[in-house]
Amino acid sequence: MLEKNEGFQGQKVITLPPSILEACQKHCLLADFYISDIGYYPRAQHHYRERNCGTEQYILIYCVEGRGWMETEGGKQMEVHPNEYVILPSKIPHRYGASKDSPWTIFWVHFNGDKAAEISSLLYGENGALVKHASFSDERIHWFNKVYTLLESGYRTENLLMANIYLKSFLVSLAYGERVNGKWLSQEKKEINDSIEFMKENLENPLALEEIASHVNLSKSHFAFLFKKNTGYTPIVYFNHLKIQRACQYLRFTDHRISQIAQNVGIDDAYYFSRLFSKSMGISPKDYRNRKQ
Image 1 (spheres, one colour):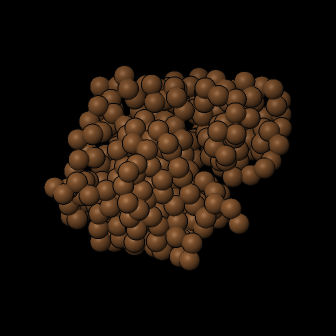
Image 2: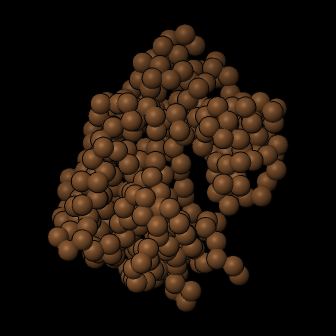
């Protein structure tokens, strides 16, 4: 079997759309540090990445099982073992991959921002090592899962801010090996959270605004007002964000036809789906699939 970039049973991946990243860059509390991609690859057999020009983002890979390796330009290949993490600077050529006989299980994140270099320097430590040890912590995994769950629920500003807080706790725990209280008490209205859960459970359906509002026992106009007030988006725009997020998963990890993926996210018109996808992600579904391959 050939080495591959992605496609592992049980995997999780989220890529934030360019429009959301631009909003992060302009936000006074997010510009310093924001997530661009996040994922989890269990037992990632044949996982391999090579970037001759590096990436614009910083990359953190945390190995909890199995083994892997990494190599930067002009450097020797270094093994990565369980309870070790890799931090890769931006714009540095690199290669990394899973061990052939014991493929790694990894949590990973790409991040950027005005303070990304300073945050990365905490992870390098005093000796500047790219591979560092960090004892396993259930609380650390909890923080990572909170980040993923928040982004999985959409890109309202509160989600992005809370995701960054949890991710910072995750990174600090790697850098210092300390348990930090990462709890956050949300003040979001129950009706809004329930409506978003309803959207997530019905991504394959073309829900109307009336149906979503009815689910939380609110009038259409009052629900639309509360939703926009709490999330910064209209309900349908938010619902479409969740649909496109799911479509990205299909494009990454299946060979389904684009028309079938459109049906899977509740959009009957494949041409409308392509326009909606391109508007959200800045790239067509076909080009997105080819880029990720």
